Image (cartoon, rainbow, N blue to C red):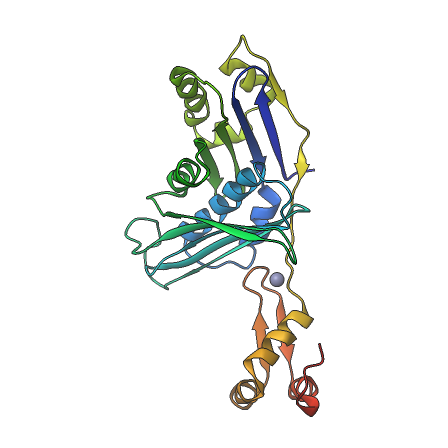
Length: 280
Ligand SMILES: [Zn+2]
């Protein structure tokens, strides 16, 4: 198993945390990606942030972490299913410098989808200068349980991982929180990615015992399918499909997450709209 998340907690302190490693998922997301390095890095960060945040959630069907703005980075989104399937993509203005500074009206949204006929709820915070700072703010403002994130992404090596700590209800000394967060804040991304939690977590509070849960496997997975694309084409309408056919010779839809290409020739489109009824 290469990609996973893993929770841990201190038995006698109101403090928990998690770590994750997403190299395969990140490499798969970068395959077929040809945008600026800034976006490549943010894709890794949003995946890591979501995998860590997911360790605080129960009974969800799907989690979505998304940033939106009117600036050069239009959209950054990562999704995770209850089974541990993850995917992500970004949309940006070509040629623009993409980072979180100078993004007007930028928001970070965390959506918890509980499934078919159950609730869906969303937490929103204003986007800060980094995703780390935005996630910390989300936990302080929306969850009201302070958290500290460290997201480590090496674009060239296609490595992505991280740690996070969360204060739980109960009395944790300010000094203890500072010591714990300092432990995951210091050092290079590479040293953090290499660190063995069995060795370094007990060093934070040598007097207290820390427990690690088993690793939860995570994988890349995309929910796109030809049927879903057909439904989307039907909802756009026959006129639009025929117009594309006339100008392009075929209707070609590429999944923004996995880059799968769905091609519809004129006969496919004719069948799809046969008798004016959607097939699905
Ligand atoms: Zn796809």
